Length: 149
Image (cartoon, rainbow, N blue to C red; front, side, top):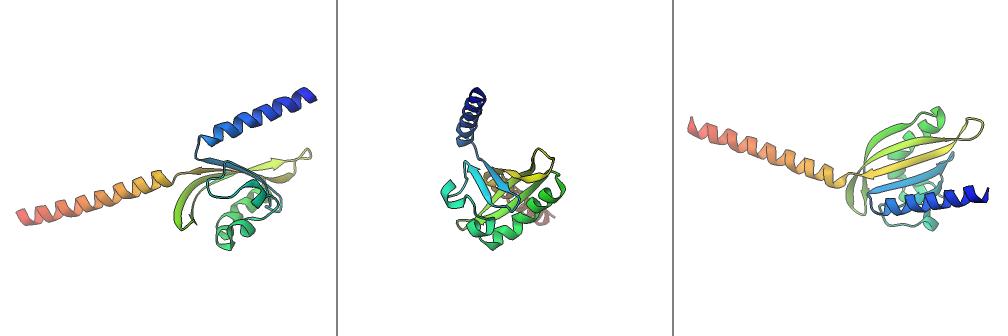
């Protein structure tokens, strides 16, 4: 068993290192949606600040009301869920792709969830800027055509 424990620790260390080079956060929560662990948080807090607490206790009721229903549904149904979420964090609107996976115990019951957060803020903002620029170009072209007629 000691060899297996060593392999698990080494694998976890490799995962943690890989996450530090990404815009991905991995969260594990229990059935009551209390944080058990957070790997590579994309906003300012550390493990000690969140472990054992709920989303509302850590981030406030507004965040909890947006993201808890999907987690509760996964706990109730045992079926994974994926969603796009926009949250205001540190006075900035941030965009995330979230995947919620059930964690099953040896009896096949859902004991909690693993949540993968992938930050897409830069991509979403770029797409919005391109769409706005396209709209402005269409308007300018329309005015140019009106002048020619």
